Length: 339
Image 1 (cartoon, helix red, strand yellow):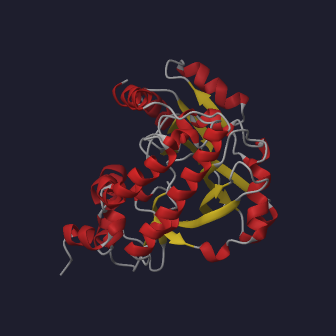
Image 2 (cartoon, rainbow, N blue to C red; image 1 turned 90 degrees about the horizontal axis):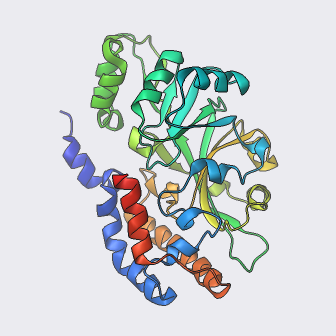
Image 3 (cartoon, rainbow, N blue to C red; image 1 turned 90 degrees about the vertical axis):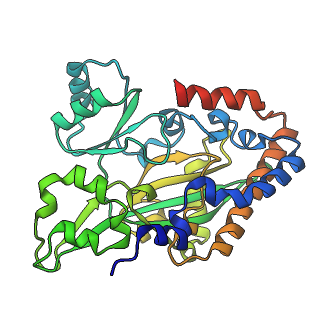
């Protein structure tokens, strides 16, 4: 008998709504606000990113601060661009399908899509309500979330969270349909409705024995991707790589690089790295969502990162960087939520 998903959600905090997970941390946020003398201290953590990367930051503006050889081919598309101009843009940048499309200002994987052909691209272009970016689809096999930070008075920073992403897949047994295989997986069952809409009749396809089918190629937790704690792979070589990547980004002190790399030796050498995006102060240390991580350790590690960001904010404030007012933050959130 299958365990009802509601019980799975209750027993595993990685499935909790974000507000419920963060609720016990509210008193600690108030403590840090008192310590930094600002309810919005986090907006002063990254002066080089709008609102510190708390909310509403432009992905393309952030990517411009990362050396080009670490980036996939990326183009910015305005919502009102005509179809012929869009096609010409792809030709000019030598972009071929498949592609990744994502809102320039987005949250938690909303409207991120793998685009397989021109028809899907035009449908996406018509669907999205704001400007977006298109990137080449990077085929490197390892996807990571790397949280890096540096205190303003220090010449170098460090990696404090390293997360490896395991995409949502099913493995064939030679007799079960994709739908049946999904229903046998707790993680996949959470995505059943979305996958049914996406795959349609393909849900009835029977996979050969040991055949692996990637159900969701987008590495977001809300899409069923499993986050694995690989902090044991953090070392001085890794710190050096991300100090090098971020050294030209003026006003950046705290954030998570979402990236793909060809191999771990390449990672330590700074080779064959493609950074898909960089998120600012609102970045979670992704390793805490490892299914085998304890809730107590998750809150402990989250507390360390919040304390780190508060320390950065204090130093920046002493250097003349002012946090946004509460009113400015509210206008920012309201603008991006309501348009």
